[in-house]
Length: 391
Image (cartoon, rainbow, N blue to C red; front, side, top):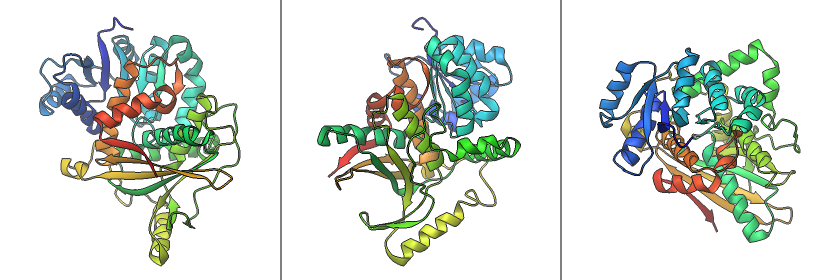
């Protein structure tokens, strides 16, 4: 693929999140002579030109017209680039043809998918084809699930270094988070619920922590759905809405890495509130909120917070590794910017850049399995995300 016209195409650049991804390339690589050769893609040349000018991209920035409803345009786009980054979702509605085109052409692919039933369909349909072509199909390359996927990966590296073995039990605990859900997240959840109503077999994948590890069923996993008090941390824990997808991706990374964390690995994710009765009340309130997480007026695709709101967002995640003898290890992942937009757009962009230097074989995988520490370093240097042991 070294002779392809572009290194990276940002597909969906005229949408809200796609524009933020393109802005990242302008900010980080727009004037770098040795940066990636990147282009913007979308359905309308007029809108692409408008977005290019609004974000301050050079007028020489290549623009590519491609449409999810036009397979030939997707094939043509894939043939021109080494990597496609797509923000065109819900992916279960608009992603099938692009994944298929990338798998056929050996083009690397990364998205922001949090739709596990569709991801399983793509694993079953295209994993072997992508292995043969060398295409690396990298789902969930945003807030779901990079901080969690890489947080566990880095904790386990430190666990082996310090204690000679991976932690058989890891807890992911969101200590704080400020930001909003994206319209794409809301649309994806709605599409998933409609798909489950039409096809009840989807519910099994949604409920199974090992729904993305075909042929492997690990040990019983902590549910993470019941609020409880965590003595070690001194706070109440409540269910975390994104655990459903993150847990599956963490287990797929472990599966693809030959069970580096152990075949008996157990993992869950929850949100921490506070101590005492106030914390208990907050945890129960979160439980109620999950029945209708987006409220009466869910955000629409293409809508999002202001620049100020994005820049004032943040997240702070603690990972706790535990061994049967009582040994514990703490590892923190902290990000600046709104997790659903500002940080997610940076993560997707840097996943694309990291794929350019990736030597892993093809297949349908995860950021942790394909990129690991190389992506951690890019996120430290270009996305203002920290990864660190907490002694």
